[in-house]
Image (cartoon, rainbow over all chains, first blue to last red; front, side, top):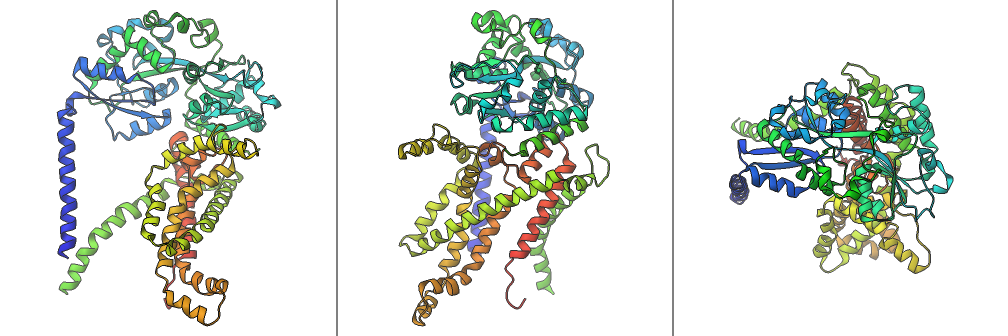
Length: 357
Length: 267
């Protein structure tokens, strides 16, 4: 018995020491109460050197956490367990969060650098007058492919993917809206279509693509394409640009039937504890030089007009990643379709995944 | 009397734990399963579960879990048997268990490299003259990696029951003229059946709800109930449907445990 007692006492003692050490460590690094900023961002979506610089310049300690889908982020913010001060949702999610009163309006007087943003990316329908959000990155959804592995074949449209020669060559990203959108676009429908007959038709069309699909994967799609595991991938433009900088053979195209144009903006969710620091961080990220450095690291397209001057001409003039307004006008932005329609999209996507070769 | 009070006192933390962390979550899952996506009370989720999509998914989850369990058993039983015959059995056992300390994701990513088009497995196949094959994102790779991950959990209970086997029983069987096969079939296996049952439970039940591997190793070509629950909760945010699938999964697990349970003789 006394042996058991000593054992438990030992465990309690060790826990106490560890707890104390952790508290000491945190406070010695400045992680205490008012002086921290908790950022909730997509994975691999910021140059971490910039976080260090921000900490050095302001003395604010940054706690950085990541998510891999807008929905996962929403779930955590709704539950309110962690006090996130900044989050980076996409446009349709901003619209949804704004309507559900999950966002705090921004004080524009604290964001002088907002003037650096290209007016083209300001005052968009999902957040009029940028009351709640500040542009972070933008881009498209398209096809990245390796012409070398396809004997010089060129891909310009979604329908090119249904070519029987492409058997087992395509990787899809695991996103219901992206893939259902691809099906809808290939049939000439809008990617915000909620007509069940159209969606069913799109799902049936996607089923016929199954023999050409190698896998439906998440973030590991970068690694797989870079290592030439497959020759075609349906990805976001930034993923394409990132892997193209590693593997020069690759090519990116926004299909001619149309595709998705998206925006990721910074917001302050209702959970925020340190609004001042959040605004400071936003303003810091809007600085042209900072934005340029971040864009070069992340490889997505920056909405910061002034920042483009600090970036290589080759990047900024690349129509594939910085398409002109004339081209983006043809693309569609995701609308917030509501829970029920979204569930239907997901249901069909699940059925499509279960469709066997 | 006094004895009874102290016993109840000792029982209290246990009961509290069970109520808070076992009974309450189960009831919550059941409760959520009665709400549709818009938060209205309804049985629509149960109706949805009995559509071909989910029934097919349930069947395929069962099929893969069954395959994984059977293959893991076929590999583990002889391994556990050999382990009991080795000199430093605890050391060998440790070596088999150590990989289970490594994070599942890390192991899955390692297999992405090994099974890739240019991975070790394909280089080997080419060197042997078979030629490169599509290994990753197939049923084979999914079952292989799952079996690899579950093997330590199968070996451990079987090893324990084999280790506790009284060697004099084997001598007796031998003396009475039983061949080695008969000894195994009539003596060793029946006496270690509890270990086998425990191992199968520990493998089959988690295998039913595997979800990370279905994406990483099988490229979403295999959809299990676990994948569906993950999608309902994290992507669709339809907690009702997610809970309904979980309710069925829990029912299935209870059924399996009661069917394979260790009923003591005379009880």
